[in-house]
Length: 124
Image (cartoon, rainbow, N blue to C red):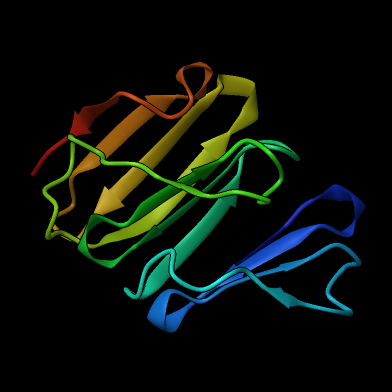
């Protein structure tokens, strides 16, 4: 999965914790330092040029507020830790981010709080 922003910046994520960034519209991709996680990462979304989120298996959730230079692991108390997060939507005009897990549960975070706390929006 990949997310591209204005100015040619972008991020791609994938199997085994793969995190890659580009600053030139995808001409050159650089690997993010290994060790963040070894789970499969399933989505990346940016709310702004600076603020982004990565989601993945087993509740993996990462947050950045510095254009991806540093990714911080977050522990989302809305989703169960063993549920995969498989979709994410960030809307700058609403200052909010939503995640969906493998059970269909939808959680929301207001980004003015640096992505925490997460609250249940919908549960099956």
